[in-house]
Length: 200
Length: 165
Image 1 (cartoon, rainbow over the protein chains, first blue to last red):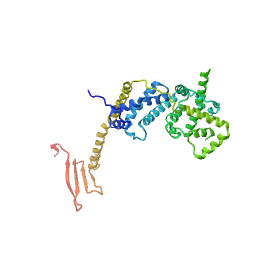
Image 2: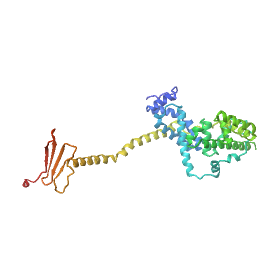
Image 3: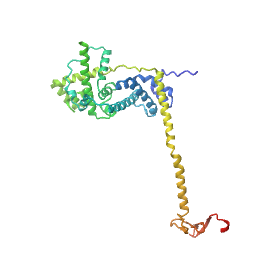
Image 4: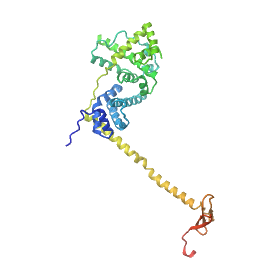
């Protein structure tokens, strides 16, 4: 019985080249290497395990179909992440169309809510262990609307510039800046509330 | 862009030199803006590099199996698409051929009518003419030689019963 190939020393670029030539075993290795990251990005945007699994798998199917378009301008992981982000955004837009807007969301879109929030005077994350900090940030992010959460994820985690985010989210740079500003202010307020809860 | 968004842009390194000078001047004078800037800085520092670690809750094999099925399904669909598109072509090609044949026959026959009258087709820019006699049930084609003289090159006579000959 033939032994499965050992890819431990094989670079992503080599696996991509083999995959582009139709080698599905090489592609499966790429999936294995990056599946956690792709799933994590889908989960951070969707906040739902089932949706995240489905969309991340769909992203891999799309990647296989579009492999020939991958020119290596960015890393394979970055290219894959963009695919899953686009799929998640499409899904979130579809979901948004089917659900009623909350008053808070409408206020956010109209702007001005962030100006009414008092400025947080002390650092709400000061002295926190990294694990606890991550937990609180994650919890606070679940309370943001998908538009605000996504802008924050793309800017802080994917390190995308305003212009790139505007392109991906199909909105203006001004909207990106406004959403990011609101997301940060709301996050500060939520983290302060979590700190107070912990202290009381 | 309002001052608040400019503060954020300063934090994110999205301002040019002139805008940086302007917003720094505001920060030096306005306590509220300075406090807001501090809050934004805390949040940027807190979030950066602190994304929750999430692991895929499925085994490698199970996760891959659905991707593999998805790829196979897409390939099957892509292969089926031309066949689905071709069903009407099966009718289009013979229909086109038939139409072309009818058009050729019409031209060759000189657009003859069926009212029994004899017709002659003499286009000005060609060196061949055809003659059709419905009464004689006969077609004759004349081709001009180098002198422009028309000579019959062939004739077609409909089969008729022996008694009529």
